[in-house]
Image (cartoon, rainbow, N blue to C red; front, side):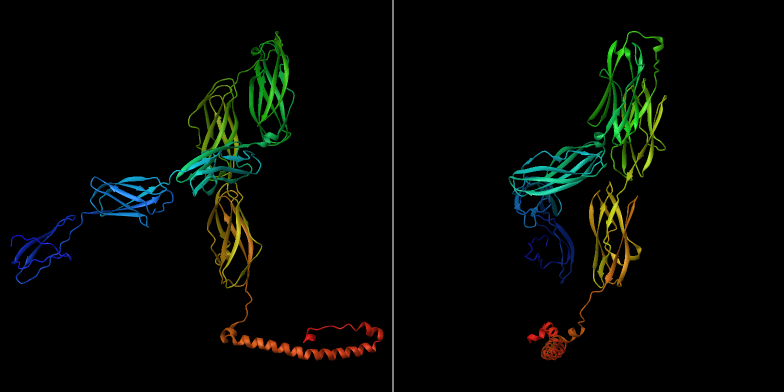
Length: 636
């Protein structure tokens, strides 16, 4: 035969009969499948089997529909796929997906709708036998009212502990069962430090105060204004609110100064004189006070300086200068201001400038070069070992010339400001050194140019966590039982730190379950527990809990006493069952009956003897001795 075509039966088989011997080519094809063919040698009287495999050209698509925030699968979402030739629609099943088969390769637009969610779509290219894709839906917007972020108190003293309430009122005007998560942060330097969070679920017209308590510890923040941030998340939406916390130096607010007499040289200046003024200023109340001193002549600032007073009774000399040619003949007033925070103290002196100047009154004013380091301040205190610090240094041109090409450097280090700078007379500039600090040390800041060289020492303090371990004096544990020893720990340090926790070596093989490391924020507490091996021999065992950081170590001591519980000897009873218990109860009842029966007669004989003795002692004594003692068996 030349060529013959047949269709396969329901089992996929076709038979060609009465075929002449020879070589044949057999092929099979079907719409939606790739064609396959094969070669077969037929001999007389033999039957040959040929297997052909048709690979489907149709593809399948599986679409998962998920919640954008929770990533949970959504049942009942309507999924539609469209291209130039196909438009199909299905709903996601209980497993959150819709399945489309018998698709040709190509690009499809997949769109999804679900109740309570915004629609979404994406373009998918179907090329594999089974293509799988995920589509995420966001919940529909709700109407929310968010009030201003509130801080109470909004101003704290730098050197005093304070509990600060941070709250944010939120009202859900439209919507139901909406979860709000509010996280609170404080800006320290260039970083946002996490303070805590509050999570609540609101229904329509419901209002809630989202709040935390920020425990401020003394001297953890420098003087200044700090931004507080609240991040609000709900229904895949994010909003942010801000407020400010003011940290002030209350030592400055409480400080009192004594401004002594203002001295002018010359005391009776003439036109053209250069007058040098001095005034002693003494701190009479307070300590560690940074004061701003200013000298003004007829309202014009002549000099200003930040001066540090360490203790009450310390006195500093403040100087200023002015040219009488700037003021003219007549009466003038010089005022001295001492400013600490919002508080200002002042003193004044009136002087007269005359028209005549004697040669003997002339005071030569020498023009000078001068550079001064006014203030050194850490911007990200408290500082942890290994962290990057920012050290702000304020430099002033206290001379009469323009100071050019000023360089700054930390002594014995490679930390140096990038390029030199210039300062005009009276001008100040704040520069910032950034470097990694590993230990507490005295830093020397050098400032110089061609005419000046000045240095100042600053103590850079590096802190680490300090773990407080609270153990009971003694723990009782029982042999052959699982026992847990619980204790609490608290970070008393000023910085967050990681602590290595371990027990002393003498009990290391008998206890387990203690985590090797824990991380605690300042003031954070945690309850720890260790399990004692039930096979420990009874006795007393002293032990220690040791906590280490990179720069500190804490040890706490206690002991545990291993004892055995008292147990009823139950071996016989367990062996014989309930019968021994019944016999024991019967024995107790028999003993009670015998005691009741014979105890009364015994008591009667004892009473007769006692009465005979009383009669022998006389009538008076007998009367006093007639009081009868009653025993429980008298009622038998």
